[in-house]
Image (cartoon, rainbow, N blue to C red):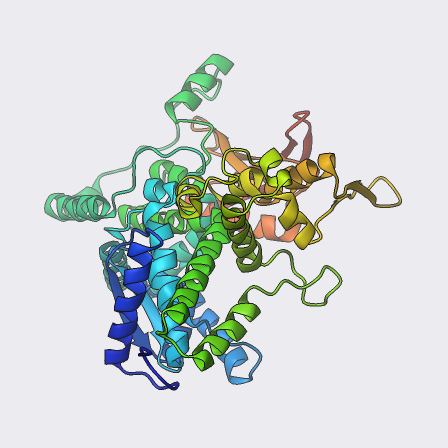
Length: 509
């Protein structure tokens, strides 16, 4: 008998569907997931989740209200729809589903989010190394309460200025290539509370009356050897700008450092997701497609429900052509799903071409084992470099164009031939390399014996400079947090030639 008939749902139906999906996910696909907490929310609550970047708890800041008003206006005017679900990378995984969904769509999002995304969150190496699923919810609760207490004690305007500056720099507040230790947000919370308790226990108002030493008595003349020793002591160069400011800024108070640490930890939580969008959505889409088809094959969902599912699925994996006004790059759902479906085809029904390009997996007969290995051990860039096949390149009609600004015309560099397939695969994988998409900005020097100017360097690749207006605006925020002037040099990575220099002084207001 079908699990449900018609569009209406109730909690009993949700439970029956969840149990049927769970049986297929565990027994047939071999998925491994965190415990699941499903919460049914309204469209208004979904808009609220949008505003806080999908997190169930968040500290107060005006930018979240601005984001809410923006999405609400588009939704009310019919210019934008809402996601069927939002899933949180935590333990247990929190899966929000909208009460307006039909029962078919509730089944789809349970398969997609509660099992597909959940398996990927738990098993992919980047999520395992860089995020703390066990501690994120408690840490967000602590962050919300801490910001509220700071507003009561120091004033909302003072707190807002620090958060504004930290948010402006949050893209440069993550550890990209190495981390000092695995994030433990529960430990972060405990240490913060201990620091605050120590500060309160040892505070004495008489210290305000102690005369301050006037002037900087240090010798301003410093040898290059001493400067190099000082840079080593400070751990320079440092890729994480917010971390360096939090630890080294001379004028920040303890509560301001804690606010910066909160923004930095939340930014680090989202960092793996930026490198895994194609794989994460591809995994979830592939899982829901397999599960829904197997439910239909077992007679657990009706023909009408299957048609409703296929209509939604086709919309999700639709890829506009390059000359379509809707084209904005490759749809991660479409390309991820196509690559994972192609892996299954190669494992079960390989061609001679597959055996030439992928001898390790072609005809192995274990597609889900290959996919689970890929989901656990690759990110978007390496997944494309390893598994993008000529069949998918032909399906998406991908070719490579060289765009040299010094030449009057474009040049087609790679087409669908033996050499072209490899060039296309390599070129496309580089477009998913986060180090190429985000500016490489590092702290390289600080003049602690002089004017305390902080020096940053942007290493320019392929001639792509920073946008001047945005750069100057962000530098002013950096100078506010540092407490002294900040200088940024744009240096060509290949030649060490200085292309541009920006400076920002501290705003006296």
